[in-house]
Length: 429
Ligand code: CMC
Image (tube, rainbow, N blue to C red; front, side):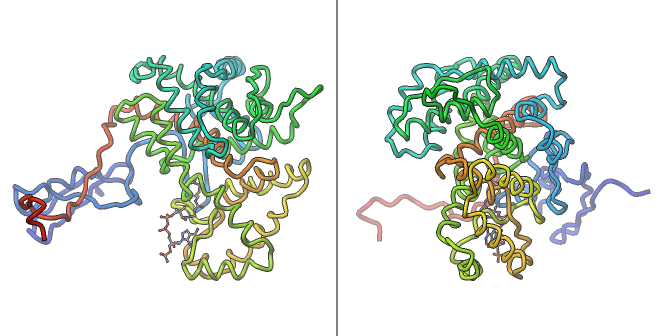
């Protein structure tokens, strides 16, 4: 009869160890018993960037990177993008099930009635220079919120946790809109809880006291779908930071400030901004081959391409490419789409990209839509932050309730100097 174990033979000692296999994984700590000398620390695994290490068990998001599959709580992303709304998806991620009509109404009410910011926060925005990057402002605003809601430290209290979830999801679009309005020197618009989530966000960005102002429903829906597509992506860099900071039982605002800081990086959520810079630089379809050759020489990476998990077309990129044309029907086309489509076609036929399984990711087309909607590139990662917020919160909530979880504390392989004596300055070579 087959056993769910590995037998590991240590060729240094000839000893054998039987290690249990559970859910296709072994516990790294089971390797600790493997040692030559009893005084040794024992065997560890070395895995920079957590390429093959499961840091948690999770029931939130499933990805099959080879097949290009993404599901939230079992629901395919394509169905959610087509039929659901961002607030419903946020509920699904956090609570694990789709809401019934009453639950959705209560959830919507709670989130939309936590959209106002403490007045002190408006002073925070004024402290920034007009050209401050909105992600820097967003990260600061999250840290600032932790100073306002002190009970948020009680992370073991589920009701307190839920209160912060309402607050964060409610207030984040207001923060983002205030960042934007501050940069363009326009007065802040206060939230309107009677509007839809994306609709209210667009209203806060745009409204200038015009009579008969309405938010274009096609643009509000497009933004809502983009938020759905970004809502969670299991253990990516920013989510790992959220869990890591959260594992120390910091409040969720501080943890989210850290997660947003990780997202800001151009290899993560900052890629959407970098894609637009690259497409602008390429400028015309005729320049595509020259740029691809430079990527292949290693001069720079093709932003919006490649993914740690997807070794197939990112399913989110497929949906986004389709939404782009809905948005262009309202805004007029973005000439960069032609460059992007040609870049994708050219790269996908090139051996360098084929061999490495590099496909367009979520950031490749999203920036083109945001730009058509007149968002400045610096706002793109802020939009990613709004979308990703429920995922971070769901993962944080799951982590706090998971009895297996401990404070995040990786090991290292120390390769530095042996013990040596301190030399006073005048005796150093
Ligand atoms: N352009 C050119 N070459 C690439 C790219 C790219 N975008 N991405 C990976 N490669 C090459 C890389 O040079 C390496 O080649 P070699 O084996 O010859 O050294 C190989 O592909 C494997 O790359 P890696 O860096 O080991 O892969 P990774 O899983 O560590 O990195 C990634 C994943 C997303 C950081 C990377 O693909 C990348 O830098 N892409 C561009 C930035 C980007 O679009 N990021 C957004 C990711 S999706 C949304 C999000 O997470 O926010």
